[in-house]
Image (cartoon, rainbow, N blue to C red):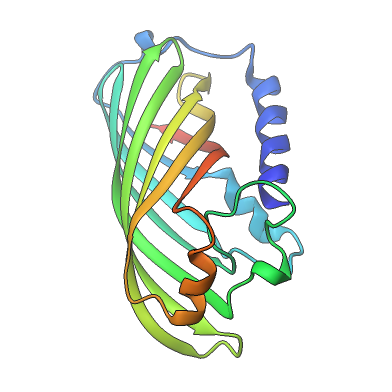
Length: 204
């Protein structure tokens, strides 16, 4: 449900910004920027499984076509991340016997390939905490989380930008996973395809 809400938000903002873009090639290098994800709005929606999601990016435009940023994220989730779109997603039957809380800081590289169209790659090492159904911490772990993203940047007033995108995520490393959580994870792949995204930010 949260991914559906984000998809609708993505297209509505995209439509409103469509006539106000600036060509990426016209943007000077040497600008810093702050950004975040519109997915944080999902924290406001009533949900049996609140994500408690936060993200902050601080970056630098190396050239008109290249940016590099530090990406800080934290979130909580209650189901295996690899469950694809369909009837099994977010069901009680596939839920963990508790939840996972993660926090990490990584790097993201973004390359503009044509006008506002871009591709980006990020790698975030997460520190994980595992909690049982009574919200009691049962262990710690580590996860390496990578994201390959394809999107388009729309700009307003030269400095403000919106980036609807689709992502392919993969987490090749997960450590110290409790048995009950691992039993759920093993039923699903360690990647997720076609996840919608919507980043917003400002350059200065």
